[in-house]
Image (cartoon, rainbow, N blue to C red; front, side):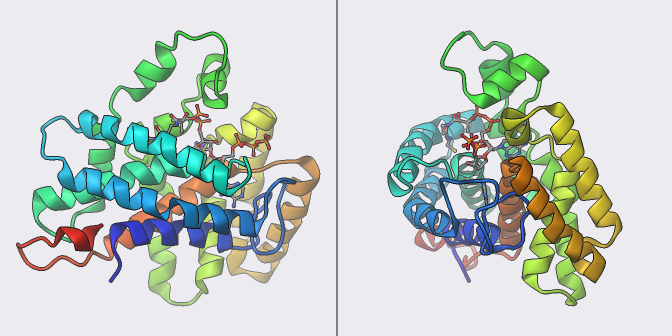
Length: 297
Ligand SMILES: CC(C)(COP(=O)(O)OP(=O)(O)OC[C@H]1O[C@@H](n2cnc3c(N)ncnc32)[C@H](O[C@H]2O[C@H](COP(=O)(O)OP(=O)(O)OP(=O)(O)O)[C@@H](O)[C@H]2O)[C@@H]1O)[C@@H](O)C(=O)NCCC(=O)NCCS
Ligand SMILES: Nc1ncnc2[nH]cnc12
């Protein structure tokens, strides 16, 4: 059995390995990116493995009553992890979104497991903890935003379109993942009919059909986001990765996204989050009521 941080690393590696992912870096090509490839993601993933352990430790140590304090304790770790990522990739942003999302999940999972003294913590409880930890984040960092320059893409897009990006997704306890992608992943795995690669790409298509991906809007506009969502739904209607015709369309979509410089990076992130929550559902190496803290990490 694996520890929480090993699962986080596995989620990163599964996400980048799933191929073909339209417009994204995968084993077949660089997608709509010129500055990074599959190996950049391997370098970035390896560099981040310690960071996930540190986040798990914060969750294990935390015994207070206000989960927002636990989130605050992660912030410095997250900022440092972004530096570690940029060092490993020569300044390319591979995993900024996942440093944030998986860091919060690692801490929420270990904290919830310590509280319940059980390895079998419901995903709903972990996501509820994520939501409590990040409560008020959109209000503080977007709605009451009081800086006028040096804005991140996420902040600019909130001001322009009211999009809440990754902050909205974590504050909702990963509603998009719980409502759409995780049920698809679990159902397809349980059928035992398809290869994990094809299942992951299929899950990505489901995410692309619904996710309000700020990454697409940052490079383009809302019309392009709608185009991506419609296109993903059309491919799913043909069976997506699970039928020969659908699979052909996925390769076609990849070519088209590369040509139009479209990269659904936010949906790629939610694919990794989906894998992580699924791996957490498998349980962790605890032993009865005496929790072996080092096993969780
Ligand atoms: C809190 C922050 C992480 C917020 O950052 P920001 O204000 O920039 O907010 P967002 O734009 O909302 O999101 C940041 C990244 O999250 C991913 N993302 C976006 N939308 C969604 C969504 N709907 N669901 C899930 N995830 C989403 C996305 O990451 C992916 O894209 C990255 C590539 O981005 P970028 O380089 O900008 O784009 P390119 O098009 O490739 O660039 P060009 O080639 O055009 O130049 C890639 O990393 C994917 O992962 C968003 O980028 C942050 O500001 C913050 O506070 N950081 C500190 C860390 C911290 O506090 N951690 C806490 C400890 S847990
Ligand atoms: N595979 C991928 N390609 C491009 N951007 C990403 N962000 C997260 N995963 C990604």
